[in-house]
Image 1: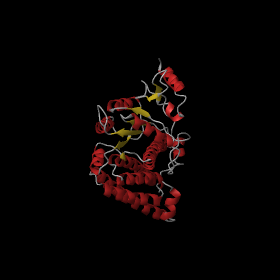
Image 2: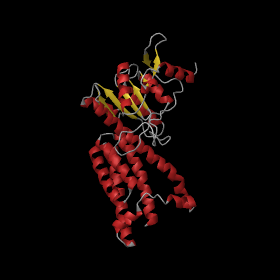
Image 3: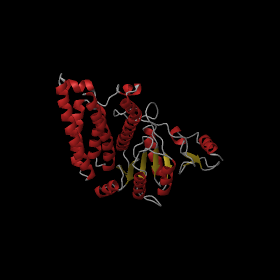
Image 4: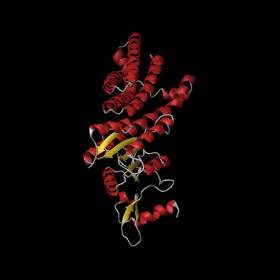
Length: 342
């Protein structure tokens, strides 16, 4: 049976199931009148989910509308836990693909790019620690997590009954981003998933913006019309910058010099803090940089420094470093713009 026929037949037999579960269930048999979870997507995978966050303003991301598609993989060897996880996601407007052990999880990740992995720790063949370690190693070998298709690193949220401080430290050490304790409380589940999917969408939106602006920036250097078009959306709110600098060109140049010097030093210190794993210091420096950048009208730079601050405060070193790299790129855009315009 072809993949299309397989999915069609499963959907017809699952007509008595709630719609959110039809995508991930197939019949036990013609007489059984029951359904069981599909353990893994068929070869090639089903069409990508159309579930997507709708905004970044603190609302629960919605499954349709403008934004980016959200793809979730739920890895757990317990079918009851699988269904509980699917039900929680369904209440938020999402569906998920399933894997039942570590090997299936890695195979699913090879077949398809996911935004979020809900990962049980105790699974056969490869436990959650081994899976997370393998994922991060593959990202490093690929030349940097999330560098393809403007995609962020895979967000890995552990789901475990062992949520003691020492266990959490071990999870963070292998590259997991967060942890949910079993039994899962819906309010905590919703908050955690929303927060990380908001991070995914923020990363993507900024990466897409850079991808669009890159050819325009090159054209700007050559004086072409495309370059002049790019100047309509600069990295600095020039009107605000001049307003706070003062009416004269000399005053604007003084503020430019002060901002660029102080920001360069702050970014150097922030990079060093992240390299050495000093998360409290990194949080403080990112907060300071976001404040001065916001005051001077550097909107994109401010957003990435605030994200670096948040992730540093949460102890998420790998993702804080990724957000900081975006802030570095924005800081360079700000520097080039100010030197050209002021």
